[in-house]
Image (cartoon, rainbow, N blue to C red):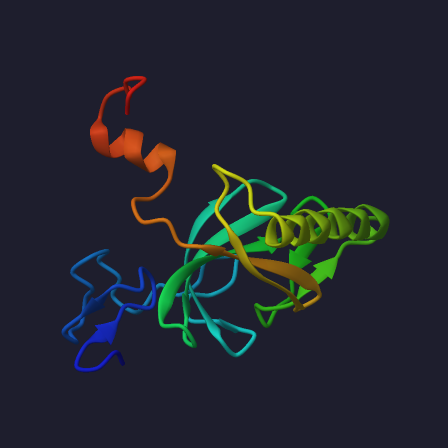
Length: 165
């Protein structure tokens, strides 16, 4: 609960409690996002997972809510699907036989890059706010940027963007 309002588990927007979120249409029944974390999962006791925003084969990015700071964030999960899978309970990562070396090397690179971005933020890259290990993988927490992805902007606009946009 957020004061008198309910927070949608999927898009994390507040609204007067009801059966369907007026912002995203989430009805509370589709929490599975296989092979990704379930909507409503909690990481580090602090971050509540919303919908998957993107996935590129190496990682997944989730919309999340920081219960401590009471703000939306993005969480990037190291999840190279070519060498690992999600365990049955839906949280932990299991490395596939023969993929151990690739997984560990990728995980080290993921941690190194996120750590560098915490130490020295870069223009044009969302700031990394936190980095932690859990569920046999690594997560970086990034500042939320309202408005969505470039792909979502182009889809909303319905035509190519000009250089000035």
